[in-house]
Image (tube, rainbow over all chains, first blue to last red; front, side, top):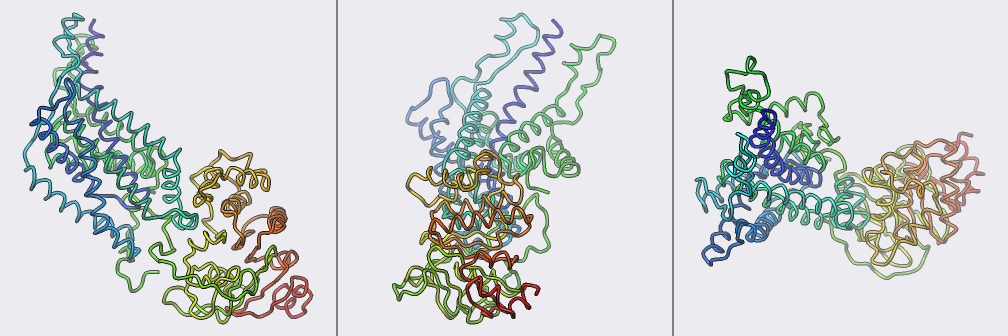
Amino acid sequence: MDFLNAIVALANFVLIPAMTYGSQLALGALGVTMIYGILRFSNFAHGDTMAFGTMVTILVTWLLQSWGVSLGPLPTALLAVPFGIAGTAALVLFTDRAVYRFYRGQKAKPIIFVMVSIGVMFIYNGLTRFVLGTDDIRFADGERFIISAGDFKRATGLSEGLGLKTTEVLTVVTAVIVVVALFRFLNHTRTGKSMRAYSDNEDLALLSGISPERVVVVTWIIVAGLITIAGVLYGLDKSYKPFTYFQLLLPIFAAAIVGGLGNPLGAIAGGFVIAFSEVGITYAWKKVLGYLLPDALAPDSLVQLLATEYKFAVSFMILVIVLLFKPTGLFKGKSV
Amino acid sequence: MSGDNPYQDDHGNHDASVTRQGGESSIDPTRVSGPVVEGAGGPFLIGDRMTGGYGKGPDILHDCTIAVEKGEIAVIVGPNGAGKSTAMKAVFGMLDVRTGSVRLDGRDITRLTPQDRVRMGMGFVPQTHNIFTSMTVEENLEMGAFIREDDYRGTIEQVYDLFPILGEKRRQPAGELSGGQRQQVAVGRALMTQPKVLMLDEPTAGVSPIVMDELFDRIIEVARRGISILMVEQNARQALEIADKGYVLVQGANAHTGTGKELLADPQVRRSFLGG
């Protein structure tokens, strides 16, 4: 019984939240890795683009709610996501046209693009705060739990409860669908293959008749889709706050680098590595250990390696360790 | 490359965790083609009295003429730094031809971009970075056929007929193949557009003599199918043996021109370039 309780507590406090968070990071990291692989720079505006996409989705959600539209047990925001993606795609394509294209024409070095993206980040940053303010916004509606902790306890008779939120299941399911669709696109369609070809060798792609500008446009649209979905899922699961989204940049970059920059498979793996480490290291293990260990050995302290306030340190530590010992990442990326 | 444009200065950054190195473009993708002028006949493909260089740099070619007839093999040879590759790139539109012209099939294409010349029926195999290393052999061929709207399965089979080893390794990433096999992928990729002219920049660089002989055999076979070949070669003697036409360049200008046999027999060419 104690063993079962330990498993349930572990699932409730570590496995399920980390799985959810990992899926969100993976989607974000896929966007970073695609821009790195195809446009050749790390996009620092990523977190704020994510905030923008979520902001548009929230505005449309409110509009839909005011019309009385709902999805029953599912959050209304799901209906608003396509609008969020469209809005974000419009924004990034406008930015590309107005800003990045100039530097492409100049054949600017990638480091110049990195700096430019920091400028873009500040503009987006102001834009989202100007429209929705800086406060926490919760926009999840519909059924909150699929299984609530109380129901679980009553049904199983265990002393530990297992809560499964709608948004958690939604996140994992959506992430799987998006990732499968993305990989099919990259590996089996003409446009997807042409993007990989461009990423591999720009000159040869050009000589093969692949239009660089078209590849760039398609990349931005896909990235807009990926991060809007990631941002909305994160916002539904937790809450929307521009500063939190900006801070997500670190774990997202860490995930992309740990997995191997430029490698989509790596981005997914990296997302889960970061998420499980972050949740695992900031979780107080006292309860789980209390169930598993004999009474004499049961810990008195919380057995929490780091307070949750320091969770970003985990991403940093993993980043440093990976760059020191395996700079190409787990899946042979290009960040040597 | 850098110099006067501040955007092309990376300020000493070598951090690959924020910027990706390798595979960047060297051809300006924003350039737009000028008009094609219908003109007089002459050889099938000719770079006629070309003078020019890269960007704003000095002239590398001086009044240089390179021509190839239909179904023939023309070879450009010469000492290091003679401008052999440059001459071929000039014919392909990869540098500024300031005076002179390039004509294909009786049309003046001097102002076309390289990518538009591919659509006109010119295939180009660069000396290095000439395959998509992360993609499979078959995907390389598919990308070669990117501009084709019709069914190109037949052309892929033709390439596999020409290079059987590629058929066996069609699912392997091209970057994992040996040097000679990579060159075959590169030639195969260029053949996918069904070009009228195939331009090869040192196809045998860095391969063993046995592989070199085999590559030359394949190139002769391609020419027999009616495709003109223009080739730059380091291995001058072997290349001239298979050439219908040979051009010896020295310092960006024509030094000797003739059929392959004539040049091989020419005592001055032998002494200066073929080692006696």
